[in-house]
Amino acid sequence: MKAFLLAAGKGTRLAPLTDRVPKCLMPIHGKPLLEIWIDLFQKHGIHDILINTHHHAGQVEAFVSGLGKRRNAGIRLFHEPALLGSGGTVLANRAFVAGEEHFFIAYADNLTDLNLGRMADFHARTCGAGGCLTMGVRRVPDTSGCGVAVLDETGKILSFLEKPKNPPRDAMVNCGVYVASMDIFDRLPERMGEDAGERRGVIDFGRHIFPFLAGSMHGYPVRERLIDIGTPESYRRALAQWGPEAV
Image (cartoon, rainbow, N blue to C red; front, side, top):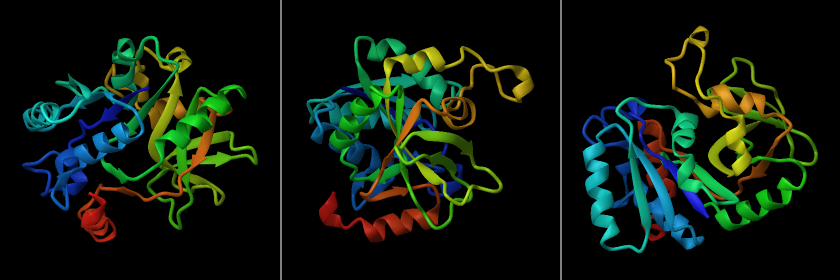
């Protein structure tokens, strides 16, 4: 399998820590978050990875260049002078996964030890039930500010809302790790209309894609550790919960 690792965000909520360092290179007990992700992919047999760049792109390029000399990983960089959005990045790089049956999409600003092999097996089973994408989901006490999914008893996602003001009480939050089948590309719009208030070419999974895939997605319950390194508070929590022995 191959994987998209989305790492181009500016990390504005994590400022001032990200004023000089991209969020994907924030250290977790001395190891950059990006390297932890690459280790996780390789652990589960995923060696071909596409990483998009934008904020402090030169630092990411230098790090990946040095890492490539030490690791047997096929890492490809895709620079975005203007951000394309999560869906836009994947759409622009359809050729990267040509010939694949399934592939991963993950946000590099999460810290996790998720069992990717089990998630891929789950997705392979749901494909027979008409699923084109599997979303990692979990229950949390506070779903405000999160993308949320409502599932039925079989795990099928009945509805998806991106950061709703009044989340449904039975919703599970989107963990930012997905397995997709190739037919997902038939569902990605080539452009967004100007009436949507978006710059043309910007396509976001949470806002523009997932709400319309209801009934074609399944939720995979994430029981392993997963922390969004989005704010100074969550970064400090990650350092406390993720001991040095884990890296």
